[in-house]
Length: 88
Image (cartoon, rainbow, N blue to C red):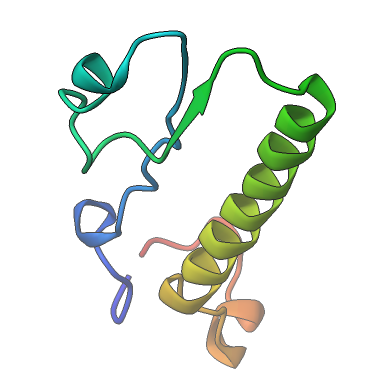
């Protein structure tokens, strides 16, 4: 399809990684900071953790939806009038 972006060039949404640990600062400091988004130390408040995970999930979903809408081509008027089984 002309004007569409090849799937390989689309950004791939990264996972969000939370580390929940009782390790000390020495062990936590060895975690790859470019991969770990948050370190939650034990003991932790379960309600705060649930709130944080929910907020991050909502934000991640909103951002990936915006990116997908910006990058994926919208159907043109000619696409709407074309027969469904017409060769491309």
